Length: 75
View 1: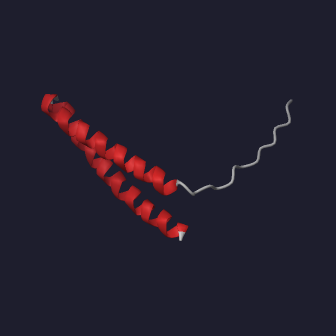
View 2 (view 1 turned 60 degrees about the horizontal axis):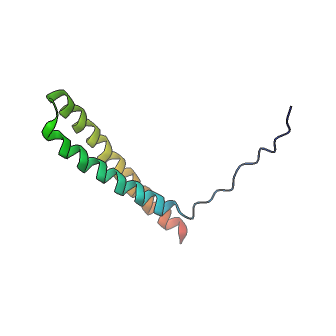
């Protein structure tokens, strides 16, 4: 049996704001692409797209709050 040294990685939060901002941009792009796809979607697909975009809006709100928290923690 191998002897592994299982040490947790140190908590490096130095780039969390940048990562979150990138996630926000990606989510917005995905929402825009989904909105464009509505034109070609069936009624069932439209419902799914709209529901997913609503979840994305909720995620965006949470990510924006987290960015504020992370920015405050940097100071």
